[in-house]
Length: 146
Image 1 (cartoon, rainbow, N blue to C red):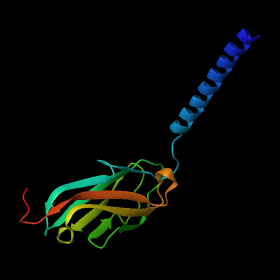
Image 2 (image 1 turned 90 degrees about the vertical axis):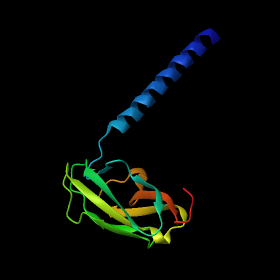
Image 3 (image 1 turned 180 degrees about the vertical axis):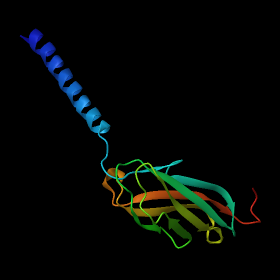
Image 4 (image 1 turned 30 degrees about the horizontal axis):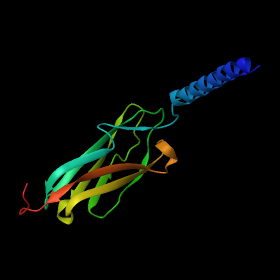
């Protein structure tokens, strides 16, 4: 009896694992409905080593890869050292938009990591309420050794 039950159990277990793997793959293949960001070059920008003083700029460009217009309602930096501008008009599916950042480097001392929060009608992974962009770098004074 044991000789029959053990192989039978192994077969049933293997089949159930295969069915579970297929359903997970099916979920991954589902396309997100509505607007969706795809940032050219990713959602993080590294300024590298920057001299303290001048304003540093970066423009995050994105494509709407969804099937409805993206409407950006607000873009908020994590601190007052960063100013923002963005595409104010709806970004249609397949079209490009931007989030422009200007960082006051005179307010940075050494390594910095900042966030910029986007409120919009676009899909955000992991159920978050806003999309987050990241900037980082190392602000050095003139007297710093490079």
